[in-house]
Length: 169
Image (cartoon, rainbow, N blue to C red; front, side, top):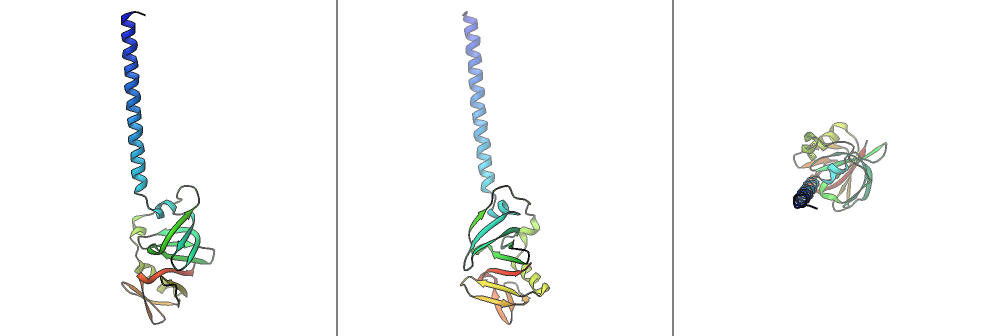
């Protein structure tokens, strides 16, 4: 092999090596971005629209389709007649089936509060069963939704005391 051919081959090898290193660096950057993006996704965003099982303080396991998720609570369609509204603070663990989320959570959903959920219960005048974080229950028709409490049968129930609410679908 002639000197000029050797230098050309060496030049080609160096160019390929640099390209490989550049490709590896780009792959590392893409992986870092993917990890960073994944870290910004909440469990609720990841599970929205999927069948899940929640372990809930004072309730135990609750199964259903994650239909809605707010900053304060999630709505699970348990079966054709029953829903669960579960406090985010009472969720101990989440088990989800495989697959991607079936829907995307919008800004309105993210900003919906406990007061708005209770206002819906008051409007619908349905009998609900409220499981409190201490394991006790309150059953009745909500009559008022205050800024930080719901009134059920004359009893004021602070939202912070609610682990979950079982209600008609």
